[in-house]
Length: 147
Image 1: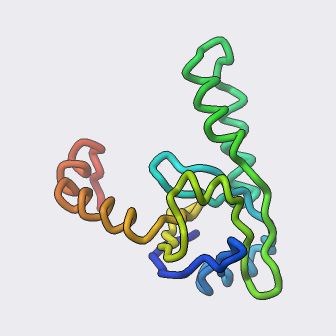
Image 2: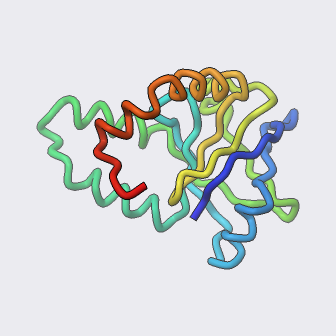
Protein backbone atom coordinates (compact mmCIF):
# COMPACT_ATOMS: atom_id res chain seq x y z
CA UNK A 1 0.00 0.00 0.00
CA UNK A 2 1.29 3.42 -0.98
CA UNK A 3 0.43 6.54 0.96
CA UNK A 4 1.87 9.99 1.63
CA UNK A 5 3.46 12.53 -0.65
CA UNK A 6 7.11 13.07 -1.43
CA UNK A 7 8.95 15.73 -3.37
CA UNK A 8 11.59 14.57 -5.84
CA UNK A 9 13.20 15.63 -9.09
CA UNK A 10 13.42 14.05 -12.51
CA UNK A 11 17.02 13.89 -13.68
CA UNK A 12 18.20 14.95 -17.15
CA UNK A 13 17.71 11.39 -18.46
CA UNK A 14 14.07 11.20 -17.30
CA UNK A 15 14.72 9.06 -14.23
CA UNK A 16 12.89 9.34 -10.93
CA UNK A 17 14.03 7.99 -7.59
CA UNK A 18 11.17 6.04 -6.02
CA UNK A 19 10.56 7.34 -2.46
CA UNK A 20 12.29 5.16 0.15
CA UNK A 21 9.00 4.31 1.91
CA UNK A 22 7.62 3.02 -1.39
CA UNK A 23 10.82 1.07 -2.07
CA UNK A 24 10.44 -0.68 1.30
CA UNK A 25 6.92 -1.78 0.38
CA UNK A 26 8.09 -2.92 -3.03
CA UNK A 27 11.08 -4.80 -1.61
CA UNK A 28 8.88 -6.53 0.99
CA UNK A 29 6.61 -7.72 -1.84
CA UNK A 30 9.44 -8.65 -4.26
CA UNK A 31 8.32 -6.08 -6.84
CA UNK A 32 10.96 -4.74 -9.23
CA UNK A 33 8.89 -3.83 -12.30
CA UNK A 34 5.99 -1.43 -12.74
CA UNK A 35 3.52 -0.28 -15.32
CA UNK A 36 3.38 3.46 -15.98
CA UNK A 37 0.72 5.25 -18.00
CA UNK A 38 -1.06 8.55 -18.30
CA UNK A 39 -3.24 9.58 -15.40
CA UNK A 40 -6.77 10.88 -15.65
CA UNK A 41 -5.61 14.33 -14.56
CA UNK A 42 -2.25 15.63 -15.79
CA UNK A 43 -0.11 13.10 -13.96
CA UNK A 44 1.48 9.69 -14.42
CA UNK A 45 -0.01 6.58 -12.82
CA UNK A 46 2.38 3.89 -11.59
CA UNK A 47 0.96 0.41 -11.02
CA UNK A 48 2.44 -2.73 -9.55
CA UNK A 49 2.05 -5.79 -11.82
CA UNK A 50 -0.75 -7.11 -9.60
CA UNK A 51 -2.74 -3.86 -9.75
CA UNK A 52 -2.07 -3.51 -13.49
CA UNK A 53 -3.33 -7.03 -14.18
CA UNK A 54 -6.48 -6.35 -12.14
CA UNK A 55 -7.06 -3.16 -14.14
CA UNK A 56 -6.52 -4.99 -17.44
CA UNK A 57 -9.06 -7.63 -16.38
CA UNK A 58 -11.60 -4.84 -15.84
CA UNK A 59 -10.74 -3.34 -19.23
CA UNK A 60 -11.21 -6.73 -20.87
CA UNK A 61 -14.77 -6.76 -19.57
CA UNK A 62 -15.65 -3.42 -21.18
CA UNK A 63 -17.69 -3.65 -24.37
CA UNK A 64 -15.56 -2.87 -27.42
CA UNK A 65 -18.76 -2.01 -29.25
CA UNK A 66 -18.93 1.27 -27.27
CA UNK A 67 -16.77 4.09 -28.60
CA UNK A 68 -16.28 5.60 -25.14
CA UNK A 69 -14.88 2.30 -23.91
CA UNK A 70 -12.49 2.01 -26.86
CA UNK A 71 -11.35 5.62 -26.50
CA UNK A 72 -10.65 5.25 -22.79
CA UNK A 73 -8.70 2.03 -23.34
CA UNK A 74 -6.63 3.70 -26.06
CA UNK A 75 -5.97 6.68 -23.85
CA UNK A 76 -4.63 4.54 -21.04
CA UNK A 77 -3.22 1.40 -22.63
CA UNK A 78 -1.53 2.97 -25.66
CA UNK A 79 0.57 5.11 -23.31
CA UNK A 80 1.50 2.24 -21.00
CA UNK A 81 5.07 1.07 -20.56
CA UNK A 82 6.70 -1.47 -18.31
CA UNK A 83 9.61 0.01 -16.33
CA UNK A 84 12.12 -1.53 -14.00
CA UNK A 85 13.78 -0.15 -10.88
CA UNK A 86 17.56 0.14 -11.18
CA UNK A 87 20.01 -0.49 -8.32
CA UNK A 88 19.71 3.14 -7.19
CA UNK A 89 15.92 2.84 -6.87
CA UNK A 90 15.17 4.84 -10.02
CA UNK A 91 12.73 4.27 -12.85
CA UNK A 92 13.05 5.71 -16.35
CA UNK A 93 9.88 7.53 -17.34
CA UNK A 94 8.98 7.65 -21.04
CA UNK A 95 9.26 11.13 -22.56
CA UNK A 96 5.71 10.98 -23.98
CA UNK A 97 4.31 10.55 -20.44
CA UNK A 98 6.48 13.36 -19.05
CA UNK A 99 5.19 15.60 -21.84
CA UNK A 100 1.53 14.66 -21.26
CA UNK A 101 1.86 15.36 -17.54
CA UNK A 102 3.76 18.62 -18.09
CA UNK A 103 6.66 17.32 -16.02
CA UNK A 104 10.07 18.86 -16.52
CA UNK A 105 11.93 18.55 -13.21
CA UNK A 106 10.31 18.95 -9.77
CA UNK A 107 7.60 16.43 -8.95
CA UNK A 108 5.37 15.18 -6.19
CA UNK A 109 5.04 11.42 -5.84
CA UNK A 110 1.71 10.68 -4.12
CA UNK A 111 0.61 7.32 -2.77
CA UNK A 112 -2.87 6.19 -3.79
CA UNK A 113 -3.16 2.82 -2.03
CA UNK A 114 -2.56 0.27 -4.83
CA UNK A 115 -0.81 2.72 -7.14
CA UNK A 116 1.11 5.95 -6.91
CA UNK A 117 0.99 9.09 -8.99
CA UNK A 118 3.72 11.39 -10.28
CA UNK A 119 2.72 15.04 -10.65
CA UNK A 120 4.48 18.18 -11.78
CA UNK A 121 4.92 20.04 -8.49
CA UNK A 122 3.00 23.16 -9.61
CA UNK A 123 0.13 21.05 -11.01
CA UNK A 124 -0.06 19.08 -7.74
CA UNK A 125 -0.24 22.28 -5.71
CA UNK A 126 -3.00 23.70 -7.93
CA UNK A 127 -4.98 20.43 -7.77
CA UNK A 128 -4.70 20.28 -3.99
CA UNK A 129 -5.81 23.89 -3.59
CA UNK A 130 -8.88 23.20 -5.75
CA UNK A 131 -9.73 20.04 -3.81
CA UNK A 132 -9.25 21.71 -0.44
CA UNK A 133 -12.12 24.07 -1.18
CA UNK A 134 -14.55 21.23 -1.83
CA UNK A 135 -13.18 18.37 0.28
CA UNK A 136 -16.22 18.18 2.57
CA UNK A 137 -18.64 18.29 -0.36
CA UNK A 138 -16.74 15.53 -2.14
CA UNK A 139 -16.86 13.36 0.99
CA UNK A 140 -20.59 13.96 1.28
CA UNK A 141 -21.26 13.14 -2.38
CA UNK A 142 -19.21 9.95 -2.17
CA UNK A 143 -21.02 9.06 1.02
CA UNK A 144 -17.64 8.60 2.68
CA UNK A 145 -19.01 7.45 6.01
CA UNK A 146 -16.80 5.80 8.55
CA UNK A 147 -13.84 8.11 7.99
